[in-house]
Amino acid sequence: MKKIPQRTCMGCNEKKDKNQLIRIVKNKENEINIDRTGKMEGRGAYICDDIKCLEKVIKSKRLERVLDINISDEIYESLRGVILGK
Image 1: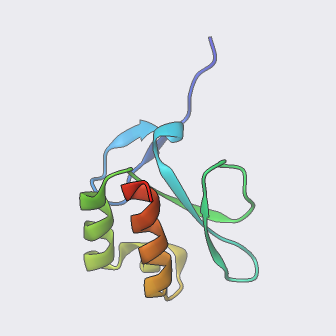
Image 2: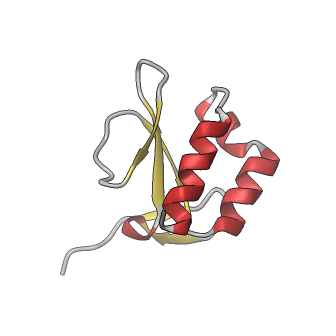
């Protein structure tokens, strides 16, 4: 049986299976992307598929500190879209 890697959500700090979380990636060109496959190259951060966790991350600016880059509102809006299933 293959073991599923665990990652910590930046919103609620709960450890969950990697495939249950949304990965946000900063690549070498300092571009921020939402990585559904989990295979994009770059520095990754994870968040639950829950709007409450996203709101916590936005309020605390934790994602900006972890990835060491300013994140535009467009990125947060696209994350909201992914979480809400738009």
